[in-house]
Length: 545
Image 1 (tube, rainbow, N blue to C red):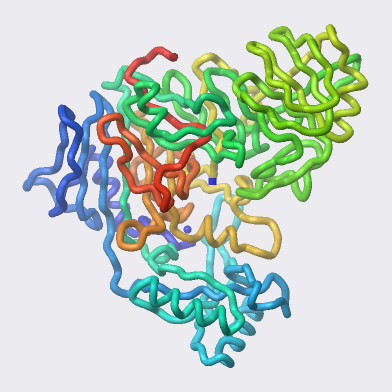
Image 2 (image 1 turned 90 degrees about the vertical axis):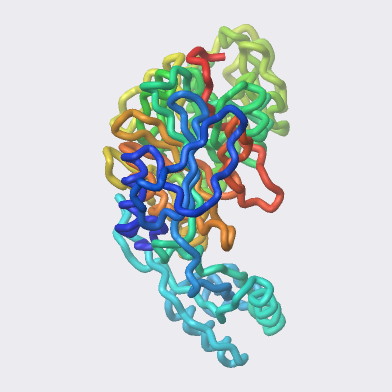
């Protein structure tokens, strides 16, 4: 799994460039060599009579299939003022030790004290204010203050200074200033897969590896399914399973991070809606009913929080944070091959939800067509007291939208809950608090690193012409692509003409693959392509599989 007026593509020139891209369907190449296409696939580049677009240095387009086009753009430039620097960490409390400090930023007074300590050691620090823009549910303001030392031409030089700071009793890390999100013309590599259903007769839907708990690379999924192209989709846990609401072919495979943004695809991707979603799931046994906390996840561990039933420390969504609950019921479907083991209780259910076994430990595999219900803590006591072999359990489950309406889970329904929301009804709409990307508590390091700074991002959206867009922006790669902030991603999708858009998993997970070329972008992990919990695929056939 795993920004601010700090927008990477939000200047007037950038908006003009991408709006023109939307209108023309491609962008002129202005001096760069086009990436080779697979044999038999047309590559288009604008001719000499095409207009010059601001900030777009080059672009190439490849027709993957009639109505499906992948366009790779180089936008912006390398700013000679950008440099490597050393961010010096701050302690989480006043008076905390500097040598074990972990916070990237803090209150002004704490940052000033750190700067004074650095000066006493002969360094020349600078204290910089970090601001966030106005989000749909949070006003603009100061997030905190960061402390930096020096400007260096390359990372090795900055690393040498960092080593000296470490010996002097400080902690920190190297940063490249182009990734701060403050330069609207920073160098970016943007990859857009556009699906025009007026020409394309196939479908766009989701898929995953051999099971929910066994992640797989996108390249392998494209090859094994015969897909034309694909992009990474949801966050995923350490077990590899998707996090948040996941509905595939109308089947609820993972319960919601309550109230978080998601995208619903129907009719093979021809209809796309961005909204917020929650789930209500309960079970009745022996005349008693109880809330089911989750579907296909480890009991007691609620990654990204946003659960039900007294989770700690919060039931509000919190990106990349694990909440806990010592008493839970979690249902497992056969899509999860190796359920977690451990103390507690479980029942094994056939396809009619009739109990075939009651166990005082956990870990049985769900039978074909059936399921298991695992319990820990007080919920285990309840399950043992009320479930009997041969009895039938009654489950109720509902997926609700932001208006509280039940979402029909038809066989052609796919729902991916990721977030945050980026564009709604043609307007930039980032629910930073509601989607949990603003970290609760005093330490705003995560918010700064994940929301404000430039990162690799993946997005999905649809424009006014009904064309679906799968978009990847590379990042964290000096001299190649800086990455965009969350707000920068929203501005980018709006500039591409999105009427609705949602942020997908990003960072090292961001990858775009086509059947002819393989990996189109440059994933940021040093080890290359990651395995993923699930993906979005473009299939040549309209029928499911």
